[in-house]
Image (tube, rainbow over all chains, first blue to last red; front, side, top):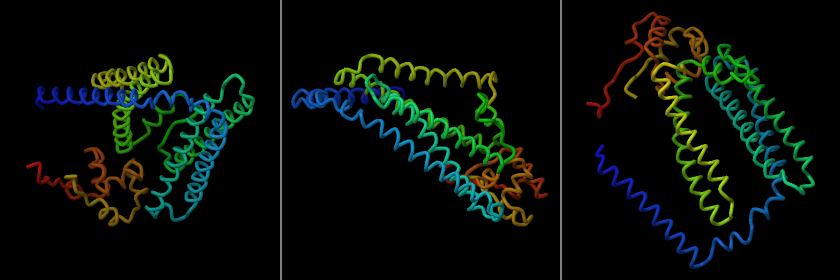
Length: 245
Length: 71
């Protein structure tokens, strides 16, 4: 690695970013695109629909999650499961899909509920009911799938209702499973570094156009800082053997 | 992957499926599947365990083949 060349490359990226910023600002001033967008107040016009996005979105995701669980349960009872490797792979796939859909439902539940909670929303009580129901159903599906995985692999440990679940689960994983977890965790960390940087930039732009204020910038900036610092601290602790993963 | 393996052959010789071999070696079925596909190189401990199960040397299951670009 040539430090001079790499530094020039980084400066090049910064200049490119500045060019895009200036060009965007020029286009905006020339045709007043963003002002028009801000005046239309798109967010307020779609806000009433968030209730339905909440109900239909989470409902569909939970349905997908539950049907994947049912499919995996059906495979679990198959007498060919032990011998048929393709069937075992299918079982893993369905369990994975069930957990992923349930997790997305839970996130969508939080976001859409958060948007729906507003003074003057007449359906607020229904929103609260839907929120609680989705949380309960999502947790139930998670518990059922984890129980199923544990039945299939008795070496797996951990109860999702306990705070130590992640730690216990990781400890019960074998070396290849741990390697998969570490590799995907590092990829996620790298992706999130980029996502958070662009989110802060987007929050700055949003402040100028939609007047979203400084809170968004501060919150995202704090998350970005915690994200990067925690990685550095944990990496150092693992290196020194202070924490065992 | 420079590590090539004959795990599937040895497993067939012993007439055990991936789950059974996993139980014998103390790992999951998925791990056996990953090793057989060449997607995961096992630790020395696991390689030795597998060799012991099949009563062969580690080299008979795993062989290191130098990649062209590594030379």
